[in-house]
Length: 184
Image 1 (cartoon, one colour):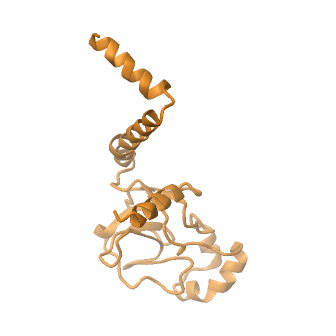
Image 2 (cartoon, one colour):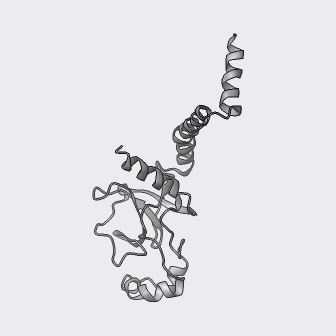
Image 3 (cartoon, helix red, strand yellow):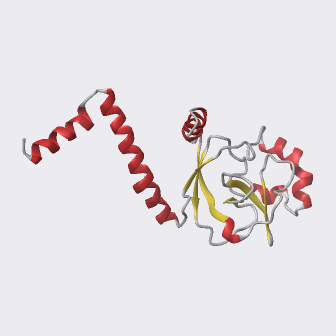
């Protein structure tokens, strides 16, 4: 069989065969495309090495509507000179949930209220919290009772959240939990 025939046979196997082996090969190809082409390409366009992150904690969840959430948190934010009206102008005023996907961009500047993602030596995963101060940079999870323990240097910040995609992050969370369960 010539090389053109072999390529046609491989193409048909990948796209038209309904076997388990073909299905597994499709998953591997999809993973490789996302990992090595799509993810880096989006990162290049958005100017960050972490263009897409899954939210793996509930630290930014609001467990009620905004007005009820604000009445529970009013004193904390006022102590940081953030008013309800100011907070309502922030992006993601209703927080977001564990399992959401956040799309990040390079933060040319950090403003009070921006949702930032930063790395720390304390925790394995990057942290995604709201900046409540910019000089120095201090962040807080909307669902946390107090600000984060550390001041954040600009070199710790990997991105600023610009878009939320609900629930899609559960795929990563479940996959990670499966790998942990299997001992990887």
